[in-house]
Image (cartoon, rainbow, N blue to C red; front, side, top):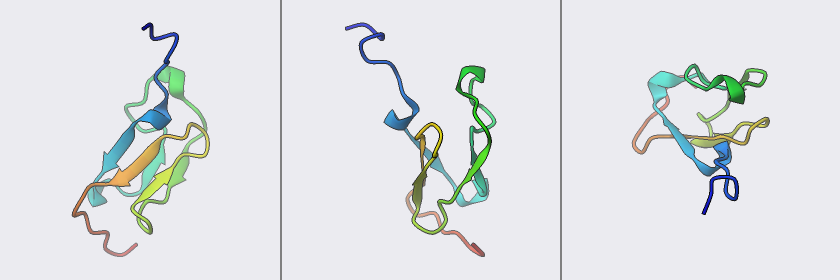
Length: 70
């Protein structure tokens, strides 16, 4: 099976974040140059999970994380 048949897509992975990482934005600071798009802030504080409207990358708060003041 080649990678061309099943290319890696950002929506295939969940990016786990901590409350200290808020506010979360996409693309993140470690994103490769090829994956750049306009920066958008991802609202994970209310539901604990959200996806980027550009690349569909999914961000989720780690288990047990509590968001204070959001």
